[in-house]
Amino acid sequence: MRVLFVNWVDWADALGRGGGVAVYQRNLARALHGSGVQAVWLSSGLAHDLRGGAPRWQALGRRPGHYTIANSAVLAPGQLAWGSPAQLSDPATEAAFADFLAATGPYDAVQFDNIEGLPAGVLAVARATGARVVVALHNYYPFCPQVNLWHRERETCPGFDQGRACVTCLPGSQTGAGARRAALAVLWQAERLGGPRLVPLAKAALVGARAGLGLLRGLRRRPAADPAAPAPVPGAEAAAFAARRAGMVAAINAHADRVLCVSDRVRMLAAAHGLTPALLQTARIGTPEAARFDRTRARPALTDAQGHLRLAYLGYMRRDKGFFFLLDALEALPEAMAARLHLTVAARRGPPEAMARLEALRARLAGLVHVDGYTHDQLDGILSEVTLGVVPVLWEDNLPQVALEMHLRGIALLTSDLGGAQELGNCPDLVFPAGNAAAFADRIGAALDGRIDLGAYWAGARAPETMERHLAVLHQVWQPH
Image (cartoon, rainbow, N blue to C red):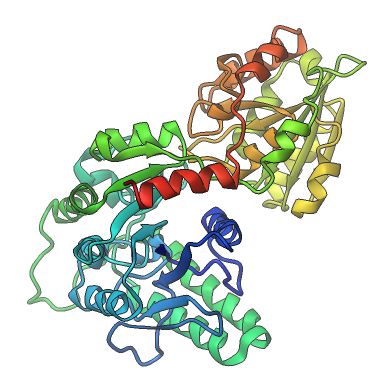
């Protein structure tokens, strides 16, 4: 069986881009080795020539089976393509994709782990070859050009409002698209010509591309320089975003054989956004460490011998991840309750005000440890005494890797009611409404007072998916008969 996997970045990317999806594909590549499945990997949206040019496909470096679409009309990651109509259709990019399929195929299945970096029209191109077309929802790009339903970098999306919410989310639309493409081209050339020696330059170019987009977020659209140019049509931008979402949903409904959702929460949101329910299937990603869940002894209690609760927050000091909410909630806790908490924060240093607030908590808590970033190998030590993990996300985080890391180590999870983390423990007693400090305090109080039944928690907890079980699910999707 031959399967093509598509993502905006290659899983062996020298700059380590791609986050959890790249990790997923890397794990998948290892698991597929010797399985009888010939895997081919295609990326798109990052490779651009300095002088421009028509979209084309080419081998990526010296890795057999790794390819890229260069000069795609759709930039990647998704936010860099903000407002571009090419996200729905671009004949030249679709032709390059069709040529790639013809030259390297045929494929039994094409699995799009992201559509970022390509027009949605490639779904029809893949379907026309006779391959099974699978779309995996690792994020919300088909519904949200911001990819994560996180509005104006400060709150979960309040509602689409027929595209008007998108207009005010990241103002600027296509302004600066040329500069973003040029920055990606510099990055691409640095990677190709200089390899590791020019990685710092490549990283600087990438930062520049993102900074250019960030600058646009605070700018209003300027009037056209040409007085003869037509005036902006009221509502046109909103209509374009509405057309984008409708077109993405229509393309998936028409051309996908199966849509894989990494959690039940994602499947529910996908249906709510218009994807045909019969296409949707929850398929939790596998983890190579799943076996440790069965051999790890769960924490016997939420409190230690002194009656203290030992909390851990892993990840990033970001608003969407709930870090600043966590500071708010801990600052608001009654003194007697706060004095029974030990907090471990494993995250890179945030802005000075965040660090000052974190340090100020030291006087209120029974203990505070800050680990300035970590590697996977350090997690066992960091979490050795932790009894409760905190995942207070403020957005619909599909399935946070940090939640899985703590779950695998026998640590119960206190989560918000957004995203897929709550499905690991499957325990309403340790779930609170996102952003609700009073509800958070109530659950902390229940943990301190012994009102959480840990036996029931672990009896209902969901075992992580092994790579073997995940591959068995994929085989049924790729070749159902």
